[in-house]
Length: 337
Image 1: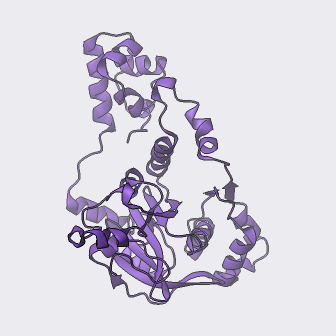
Image 2: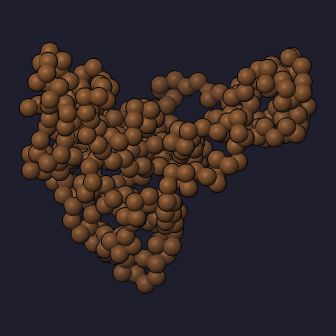
Image 3: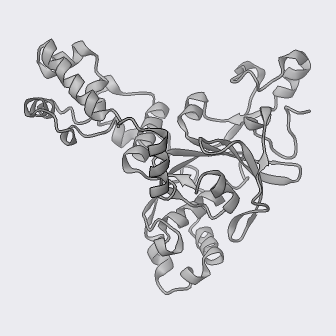
């Protein structure tokens, strides 16, 4: 609700005109300013300033709902809006698929299958509704130059042959997928961040996170981001008390040296609504639902085929304890050794 336009709030005319004249266009513009600074911007007294804050707060505050009302709304909307992944077990665990209006993260080591998963999601989002898609447009931000049109068409031909063999339909769908290749985070955020006043500029990563979450929430669209992993050294400290059994002393610390963690930090981890961990161990690759308000932690073995990712079983494997937050690779769980 932070990006709710002032023009849609039905404020008293004199307040609406005052805010518009000062170019305070959203709830965030008004409510993020300290009271004294807002008085200066509005060139108004304390009563007028407090009235503006009160009216904007009331308009932007989401209405209270009972649990029963939320359940009935979910049933009415058929799951509350989801992009189905076509991986039945995963979709069931997520309540129907990737949620709209939320941030979903896919994290895992290089080469594990994250790009394959995202290419399939891009196709599904552009797919006509009568074939189970969203019939929408896609913005694919490719920061690592890994997007492959040829691979995407191959996945489409193998997954949806009845669609991709229709003349012109594959080209139509491909035309709905816009690929952006920023050279850096600064390049990605430059255009929008330049619009902000100097006093409100933020760290690029923090700003990008806020911007992406706002897009998901305001536009009610599914947003999926990928995250690489890195090794965590002892100097990094412990993010969670249960990640390491400290009773083991030095031996435990040695095991923790090679523990893989998401490259982006805790602030990013807390911001995402759903976290899917792609990992490999015991001779298989797994998609692990490590964070979701809809599901306990479960893992699904998968393979990468010409049609994209395929689950070996729709029955999720329950994940408990340190396994929930760990990211394993190449058959070695450093926490369990």
